[in-house]
Length: 262
Image 1 (cartoon, rainbow, N blue to C red):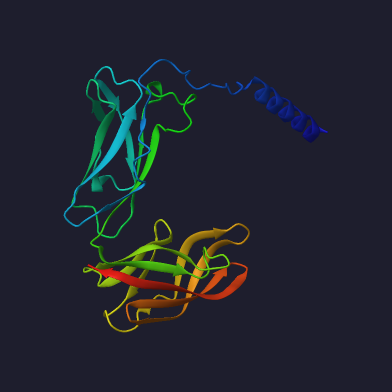
Image 2 (image 1 turned 30 degrees about the horizontal axis):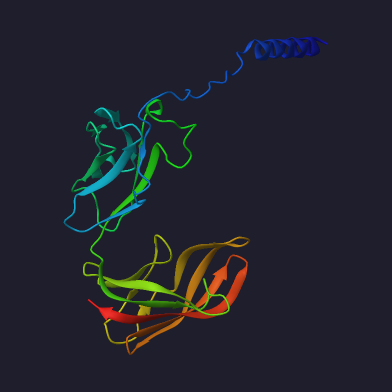
């Protein structure tokens, strides 16, 4: 009996405590007001590839009202603060609709490493609720490398984007002297490349598999698994087996024909 009385007392105390807790209060976003409506230009790319001797990345900001000079605070974040000098503000000159935010790199920026940078503008300088095609936040990926285009050509796809006939597009072949490695950059999707070793004459030495960046709507990411690869008469023939988590689509080649050597 005594245990039941204690349990009932504790239960009542807990109920009273929860009842007395302050309810969460909804705080709406700041209303749209008349301002310069500053945003990151849609002309900015989401990836900045720096050469060995480059130390600066420029991000463009724009505004709707360019009448007066304006100082805009910029909040910046990166996973590696020692690798960058990130200004706390950007200046718009009177009459200027655009301004340049300059990101400086330091000696801590390693080669062939992807560094994320995130930038944002204070809400009071934006019209976040009125404008849907421009944004007060910007995500950038920075990488330094020595890859240079050594040839241009035509990529012929017999699987990824091919319908009844093969798909074709212009494609670059690049070489890194530091890594002594060739690659076809951004082949099927931006940020995903096909890297390989090659002596410039014989067959290329491919990796066992490549992540394509392309996802099947049902089974997820598509992987290109190397079956074989040959080179002759300025033509690469790369035969891949195309797989997803559930299994294989079978094998189909990708062909690169060199049209210009640089």
